[in-house]
Length: 142
Image (cartoon, rainbow, N blue to C red; front, side):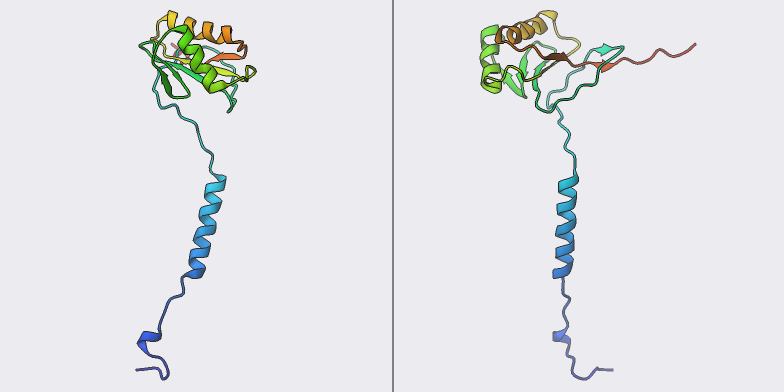
């Protein structure tokens, strides 16, 4: 049966309102999403029995991997010397010496590499230094 006055080529689906709703939902999800900062370098942090949770998104992240290489905000410092490390820190941090610094050193890193990083930060005048650790696993009851 054919309806009078309607032809098959006149039929259309209006998707403009659907597009408006989808764009509104997309904007909502983009605006409410929380972004988590993940370090691109994988290090095994040392364990500590108690830790103070202090997160500051403006912190300068200095990473020391297991081989003793330094990374500042995921950019590798090519020469492991103190002067080169200081120059790289100044380039990233600028004149802001009140900026907190998070030192993320691998648990297998030589002690000297961590001391070199701390020495460079101390010589530049950074005094808000925190060491990143993982919470230790509780011993199983016997």
